[in-house]
Image (cartoon, rainbow, N blue to C red; front, side):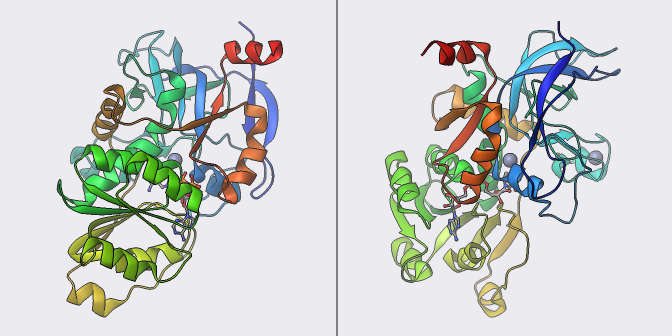
Length: 352
Ligand code: NAD
Ligand code: ZN
Ligand code: ZN
């Protein structure tokens, strides 16, 4: 086995990632080494590269929290996974396991949590160290490429929809039909909800319609709140805001039906104004939702294993990451880019 690997790292916020050859890390006691087969590119990776958020990662770091691969080495004492098992290394990289939130299956807000591709090196590399207690277990029947978008975009969408508490037959608005949103449309339909998709790009909306959304609204045209209220007969019971854009948030509160819940998952830097009278007098709940627990992860993957949810994927090599980021920032990625590390594809490309 060679001792070095390729990794794409952020050396300075706002600058292109640097493709480097670095040593393959060695798992300590309680850790595992995973050989990455595929890693999705989330808009969060772009926020991380830009240093958008108050909690900043230490430089340099390797982004990527949708990495899927095979366990190739076990640190001392590891029993939770086996060599050769296919796992995913998610945003919730690890947590303490014993605080009030971990005990209550709210581990995503653990104060000791580590974040993959942020506070710990992520999957934009050929190998990654992971915590075997927190990896996603990829069901048989899902390839690494198919699974990659599910371990962040999938689980976040699925959990966010659950947090709206919308019931089968009720309306949900999905605002932002990108990596998260195109999966959210599918999860919502599989959960029996009526879907109204909102985006600022007609191609994304056409895709939502192909996926089964009953109605679409272009938020860049006319009065999107009036349109959603008319379509849903008074507002949606649940609203999920995935858009990385501040105007979408105030609109999302406006999309919400009386006694409905607006769940925020997009994280553009900044704040948004909340019309207090409307929120109070309509008894609206506005809440955040942060990825999902290990149980949510298993549930989200099961929908895909049963063929009810499928990510739309564009494959790219690791070396294309900077052009992928540029397109993602402009809203030009159709659904999800997955970085493909398989040698099979590398040789297939050489022969064509
Ligand atoms: P993406 O770039 O793939 O998709 C974003 C979509 O939003 C695009 O289709 C874009 O056209 C659309 N959009 C832009 N402005 C809009 C507006 N004003 N109204 C409606 N739609 C609009 O991004 P993604 O990977 O799906 O991530 C989306 C956001 O979710 C990012 O901010 C990311 O950091 C965040 N995120 C949060 C969590 C969490 O746990 N809460 C997890 C993953 C990602
Ligand atoms: Zn993500
Ligand atoms: Zn904890």
